[in-house]
Length: 254
Ligand code: 13P
Image (cartoon, rainbow, N blue to C red; front, side):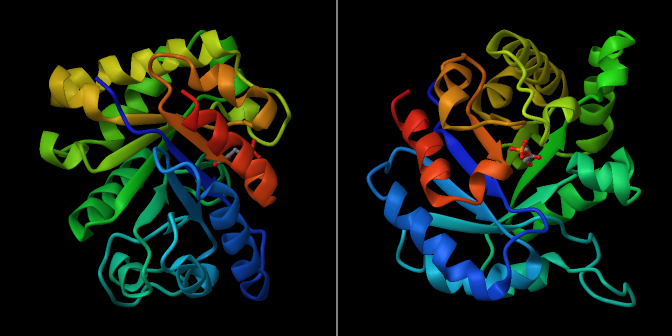
């Protein structure tokens, strides 16, 4: 089964609206030769309109980094899927470990956000991953299975095809420590097996699973060569068009 590789940048809380067009245009220019890879920039919500405008007519899709599950109402500071769609976003990251760690995100709220994003027609990039403490305590399988089972509760097989899973070991994010290709592949296989139990093997084979955590041009190829690694969710290296394009080039060569 061949799954189209997807490389998405997660800009996090970096890049101002006034700096957005230059980065998106730089990414588009540097990656335009790699039509076999889906290229995405997920930006702070306030950057989305500028990013969408800069990406018009290019190979780059634009996404946000979070969304709320309600369509509108008294939720100060939140952003709905309808608002993101209206601004031209096509993707949204859900349940990033930084949201879980600093903003009280739970598997239950991940589930609400993921279902809202899918229902709205956005491609949800749902993040899972263990902390170092959990890994060292032998809880890797338990944590990933719980995040998947609760986070994707009531997501149907048809809906599952509209999402992407990102495996981001928390200990590898922004630390310069990367999971080895074998370590990453082991968890990607676990994620696919867990998906198969939830929505059937046929659907599970279609779902793309990204690796995230200090992915860069120098280590992308060996990670992306693994059977169940279908792309990357990139933090630091997404902030420079040349670095990001280096990862896209590695994906294109697979
Ligand atoms: P880094 O690539 O900076 O480690 O961040 C990974 C990440 O969290 C992407 O969502």
